[in-house]
Length: 110
Ligand code: SF4
Ligand code: SF4
Image 1: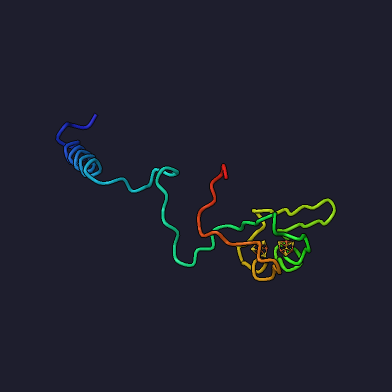
Image 2: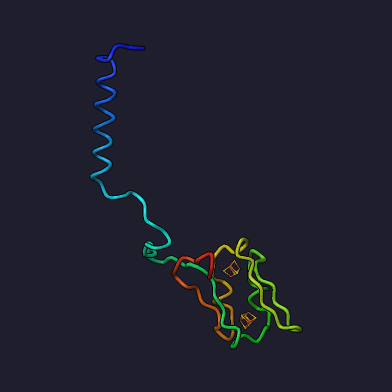
């Protein structure tokens, strides 16, 4: 066991760090209660209005990541969010303009 005077600098640093951290604001946010505002030009995530979609499949053909699967019968439109690279090509190609990029973070429960 080292003598007590050897531990004094360590204790001084410890106490100083403790009080400094207690007097500061937290470095992180309490997500999901406090959410950061999106950055400029942030594309967020892709959404679709299925009531307007005609299931033509143009968006799936334009998708460079093969993230979209569209079927006419039975009508289905499926996005694989793990493949999507948020390039927005499908939004530009859609003839019905029923897809949008929502500039917000997607919640897990959304
Ligand atoms: S391009 Fe538009 S209308 Fe056609 S399937 Fe895709 S979302 Fe629907
Ligand atoms: S945003 Fe790009 S990668 Fe994502 S579904 Fe549309 S075309 Fe595919």
